Image 1 (cartoon, rainbow, N blue to C red):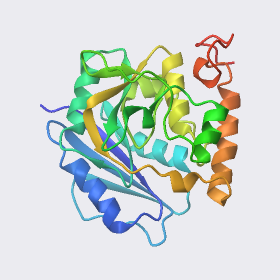
Image 2 (cartoon, rainbow, N blue to C red):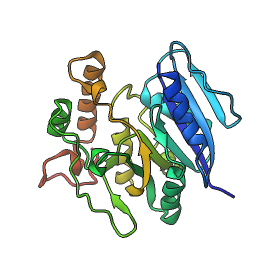
Image 3 (tube, rainbow, N blue to C red):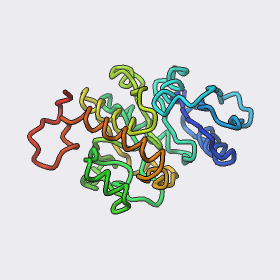
Image 4 (tube, rainbow, N blue to C red):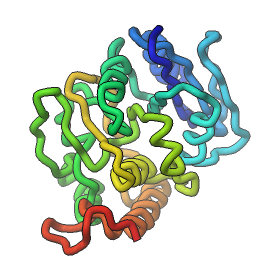
Amino acid sequence: MNPLVDVVILSWNENRDVLQEGVDSALSSQGVDVTVYLVDNGSNPPAKPRTDSRVRLIRNERNSGVGAGRAQGIRAGLAPFVCLMDSDAQLHWDTLSVLVEVLEGDFRVGLAAPAFDGQAPQQSAGEAPTLALKLRRALGLTDEYEMGTEFGPDGTRAVDFAIGACQLIRRTAYEEIGGLDTTVFYGPEDVDLCLRLNAAGWSVLQVSSAKCRHEPRRANKKLFTLRGTAHAIAVLRHLWKHRGYRGLHPRGSCFPRDSQT
């Protein structure tokens, strides 16, 4: 029997063709049995994927935010593995099976993420970003997160976090730490989840042989836009929340890695 995976896709005013391509890529996964939970977060017009018995459509009258919308999709399923996936991401046929194999091979791994097509691994995973790095990224001065790029013999590397465009999460680990921060409307809920997994003793890995297509959304995070401002506020709140975490401070910080006060 193939491993069961719930794929949660959050959509808000997404291009219908792009959204369908993402849904289709999840349904085309081999080596796993997939159920897609498509959370339409108050889109206008509403999302309307093609009918498929493996797709569950959840409609919200209003946009509840990223954290709450994704958490809603996760609660709707029961599979032991959950893939959080951006609406404009596209999985390869073996993305999920490769990531599941990593989680099944080591019970200490709470989350595994792919490397994205055409991008260096450190563009989508690495050390938890400092405020200075977030500003450099917002200004277009860098598109990478600091951390060694070497993968181990098994093709994985331990990271502080991996972006939420595609993450495979062990449901028991997710539930142990209390899930996503549903108070985050548009911000680093993905980083927050990974840091809390790390703090609870779960490993977060990036897997070199797992691939996914997703274009960086730099345009959505410009400082001088309404969404950019909302994101900046969420980032500041996040940095304060995790101010004791090693990755949020310059090298040599006196704060211990596991301090979350």
